[in-house]
Length: 219
Image (cartoon, rainbow, N blue to C red):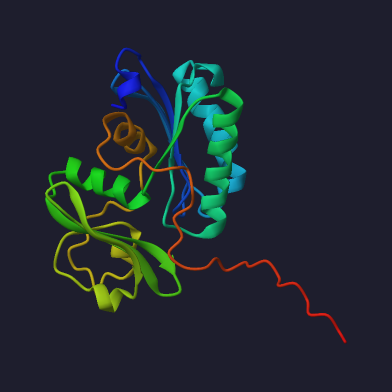
């Protein structure tokens, strides 16, 4: 737990928008008070605000009760990441509370370790017939994250993340964990199980939507 929380009972609002589905949770006193997993893919902007309201209501908490925000920083698609990170930074500023980022692949790794896996690969869908991937061993990330073609990553190791299902021919060890859980994200931050990052997007390639270049002057 971050040192300045030692004598406090933190209330963490956690959410991740780096994959196809939104995940939101409220965590306090070493337990999950409420959580919500989105059911409609790629609707981050429409679902995140409503999901935050839902979990706070279920937890019997108000925004002013939240003492920290945990947010997944990717890697992931530009649009989804932007929704989550802008929301996290805005709420952190408005509530004057810290915002902690965590690599989304690390959150999936924590879920895998909670199921007893020791050495494994996390592979999430990067589109364009690629995956975002990292290799973990003994509770640590030992390689990645990187964006790579599934054929170049093919492995017999256990694989978690949606990429393992989508490209099953290259990942026969897929174990069924597809989406990062915000409840685990909150616990990762509270216990500092992986490196805590600034709430900045982790892009491994340029976004699909680019700002137009300044037009050249016509002489």
